[in-house]
Length: 127
Length: 357
Image 1: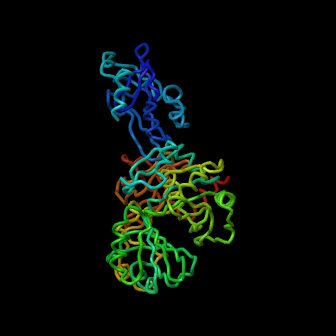
Image 2 (image 1 turned 30 degrees about the horizontal axis):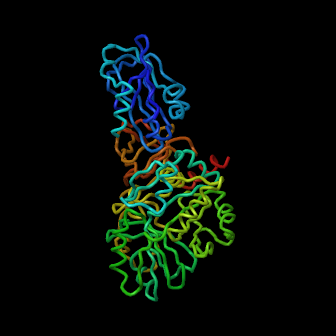
Image 3 (image 1 turned 60 degrees about the vertical axis):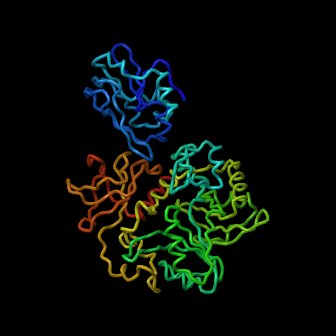
């Protein structure tokens, strides 16, 4: 299972890439594989203020609908509109082309609550 | 958890497995969308060995079986298959079944997996002199579905399926044994259902998998394929709380003979109506959601998924009797999935137009 080293993770299988006070968020390889073919993504609007661990976006596969939670609190400053028209990008490239939103992080200390790649890999072994 | 005889093959193929009606079954291999499209355009195979199969034989079999379900099996011709129901004394559906008349005094009842014990009891309680066998564990069922299914089976098995019409069955000989084949399925495509002993079934499955025209498909694609055709799924769209009339399946009930539930069904008032609908977006309605019109609850979604052929959400559900004429409504937790009703015939036409180009 691909778990890139430069990212941080949640137990709900989101990843975040933190650079210069902003965080790019997506779902992990494990999440996209468990969901199967992704058919629909509902993105928040630009400027949406989200609290950490609260609903950030919705994602649907053929079989089920689920929510994507915000790994940290902040403001949505960019959305990946490409996955609205081509949701399969989330399956094909969960860590690159299939990113979901970019958040301006309110409090960088929240990073401490996230899982390191090692901790996330350990967590996956328990599932 | 039970396994079909093809379990190891599913594991070896890397299938995503999940529990279904007491069996560990393949849900998907390459992905539901690919498998779905392969069935509409080429050929896929399903392991449906979890489905219950009962054989009845003897001079009294027709009479005894008639009284237990909606079909008049004595009037079926040999080599015909027909769709019917086991009903309860309220006219509610205990199961939907297909009965095959395989010989003058022999019938096969194909039923759902989740209702096997219940059906076994209905049959044991009602069949006194005919012989009754449950062959579910000793024989496998493989569904070969898609426009290429005929040429694939003919070329691999050296048989000729040209004379086998829709909803007809016959025995074919290959590899030193017989195999019952019907031209039927749950996909709306040309397709066949094969019944044979476990050992030959494993050999057949392996041979089919090696053929480059064939893909294995799981229960996920089976569900999207059947919903696009407006076929109901037992336990979801139909159950003991629904009558065949409410489900729009009244034409499959033969009132020319007596059967369990007949009187109640003739008297019963339809409380709801099963309808099919399309979402206006890629967002799918989901099982259990309310159907609403201007804030009022008018029904319930019983099946909902993404339609791979139409590339939008598709659903089935019941409208309560005061609302059966409503054509547009919404589904979704927040009443945010706009849906439009579509009749079954138009749905099938749209799907075939989209998938066949």
